[in-house]
Length: 378
Image (cartoon, rainbow, N blue to C red; front, side, top):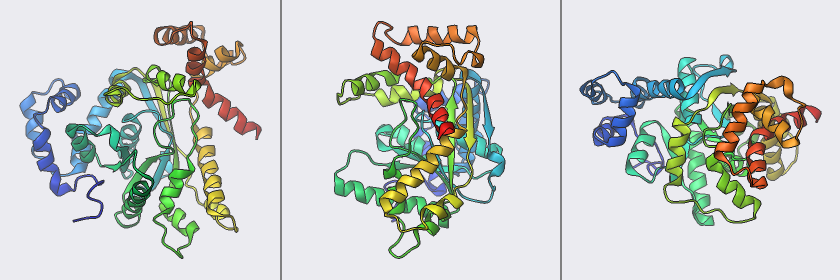
């Protein structure tokens, strides 16, 4: 029994049995009919039952599902930085996180197209409560991150996640994706939580050089940006609760509804940018006598710089900033038609008589511009 059994994806030897368990599930049929609308059901079922590895499932089924989602719900996906990765090297992709499923699905589709190693990806246990979703997550090489534990249990869980990530990169030569923070960014401020980096450091053994450990992880910051956030309106209740200093309690099945909205909602253009491998930066951070907390802060800042500077700004971002400031300073970045479309989106999704709601919605789109401008000044 592996110590990672409670969190790991399926082994290839388990894939066929897992697929046979869910092949008749209504959600699996819905996914397959959406992906292959012209294909008779018996054809995709036959191929699915002949599938015996995660890679085959991802390449022959999930990749095509992602392409269909892009076709139906976006105006196209562009990329930058993928030419810098080595197809034989495993990386730790630390990414901003806007959508529950699509962020990793799109990254892996692009890694596949560029000949890179697809990732094993972190996913919160709150998203895989339903048996079908848990099976599907494990079939797409996700590993589980447990939430809401006691302090002691959280430490043990974090250490296990850290060791799993280290094992994947160091020994299995398998790339890993993790978000820069727990949960998705809902206000447009993409900031790396030190706790994520401290979790990673737990696998560094006593006496081991911390700089060498982090360099061996081969950290690559990832920026993903959607012209329209398909879940922007769904994020509003939590933002409003935060503005009132209230504790936000999710509704039943809220995560599942957000998951579906993220996949099928309209996004317009999407861009994924891979930053440079953090190497010299790590040498510099860990070369002095700074304590671990300060080192983690500096490493967080380097990841933030890369993610924010590589973030693709869209007309919606500039429109929101001008609306927030009641100005036309960024008028050269958008057309009148684009502004009208964004204003319609705002009116349809937000109570425009609630100034706090309007401000939160606009800030969600405006903050990436503000953060890039701050970075240029500093």
